[in-house]
Length: 169
Image (cartoon, rainbow, N blue to C red):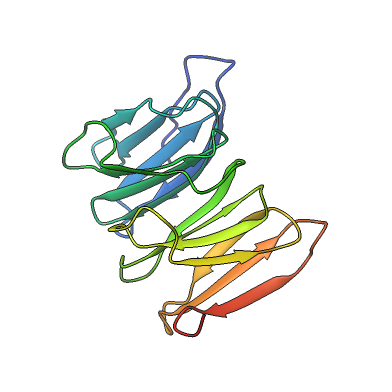
């Protein structure tokens, strides 16, 4: 196993996400920084400092990275460009605490402390699908077998698991 040490004791890892091939590991921290590490080469390949608060959610699809933060913004990066975000999404009004690409990369879902579940297309700025829960939406995952099925779970004030067929709003 490998150990990557943080040089700043006040900065903690707040979320992690592997790419589908298990080659790149993305790390978000409490200071709003996101790093992408090539695990095989043990080297940092990208670093982004666009969030102003803790990064709580990450998801990678091929070269596209989504980051969600306590600053309520979702950023979309193209890892080949290693520059500023190519798009931002600001529909949440509290912390983004869950984010997940669909299996095809056609959509992504986000959940927030504002009790909102949104589904976006990377080509649009506004959500194409909206649902409200009774607590923060932290757990999200798409089915790999039925690509239009999205499961969401929310916090202690709700305690429900919901399954949505995104083809049937």
